[in-house]
Image 1: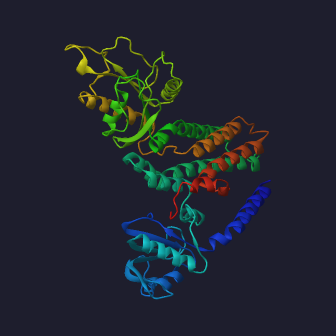
Image 2: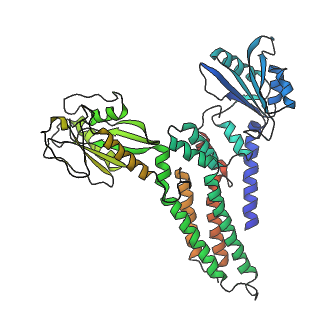
Image 3: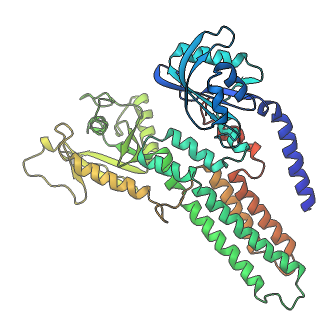
Length: 469
């Protein structure tokens, strides 16, 4: 059975290598810094003929082939007409000590659209040079063993990071935080399998630990517990990656859109004294204490509207509130009939204190404010920031890696299912079956980092990258 499994894996990988070989034997190129007017742009070239195109474009820089990873200021010229294209820095990274693991050249040129267009045209005229597909440089880094799939995902998150906490989480993942965790689980499963093999091969030996079956069951149980803790922490990584969802709800004309504009520090939403001005969801991202927050303005909630479009907006507002991480329930302090919301994280806010009597009172734990005069906003922001931080704090160590992809969660859940079957299996009479379930669990964990059949998820993962990365 094991030989058949190994044979299938070898055949699968051989087929995929044959299908991709033409692409990987070529040299790829692309603008890596973004196409457009800027001070400096970077064009990256990677592949077996990277050094040949370097010699054609800049004979002077070709000397750097003897001194890799050193910037050389050099003229870059059209090899067919000898016209000067630009002057810039050229860096040579020989295989395997490059980002992709292949021979790689970086051209740091002026960020002129004309310069970049001509340089890209010239690369396209060289033999075996092809324009890179989206994420192809990173894909080659993975194929050549420079990155595993969790590090690839971390790199993608780092590129898209907009807040400090997003950057920190992406760096932890890119530096191997998740990879190390999943590798430790794989090692533990291998240890369990070795113990099961000992149980099979040396069951009659007097030197075999009489408690080995209990040791195996305990090891599986501890691993299940560890993986479940990781799964249950999924929302932390997801919130940091995608943003904590905060929804502002309330009756018409309580100041929801005005509060949104105040939080954003710009007139993002239209405001007016007419009820029903906001009819659809308005979403914006803000940085709150280093955490990404997706704040949503909604239609005013009321039951007496006869406008079908407004009623649709009200329904959307309710649905958005039901799935929110935090609700800001905005009320008019002068309204005696305010609506309460049942939610784990509700911040009750009373607006229009500037129109209230000189002496007013609000329930404990709520926030009286005046959006019009920007009064009471700081305590509200402090409370909101604390709630956001609490939602984004892991139940474990602050540096422990969190799940950031649904793909990871799916594989972890399947691994737990197989381990639970192994744990309840009969080690005495069905040892092979227990070992089989352990191998299936290990296969799920290794699929996360790309050790088994990574081609099945290539397109999904690398599609997040831009061309040039």
